[in-house]
Length: 75
Image (tube, rainbow, N blue to C red):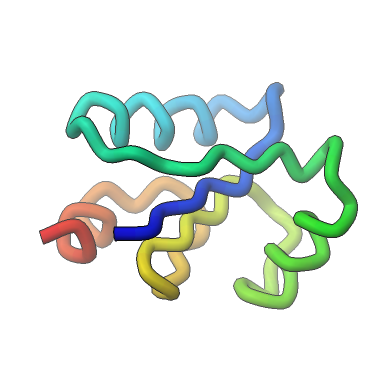
């Protein structure tokens, strides 16, 4: 399973999303879009959004922290 979280260090919902994934023992790649312009562009291309967090679970895009959608995609 490939999970990527596009985030920024100051985003409280990013922290919530990453803490939630960690609590479920899900490995994920944390991508700081404030420090990586290419990753920010990739995130916008995938999601159509500039806001974070954007979570990519096996190519399925979630904008924001949507616990129910995360759980559905992880099952």
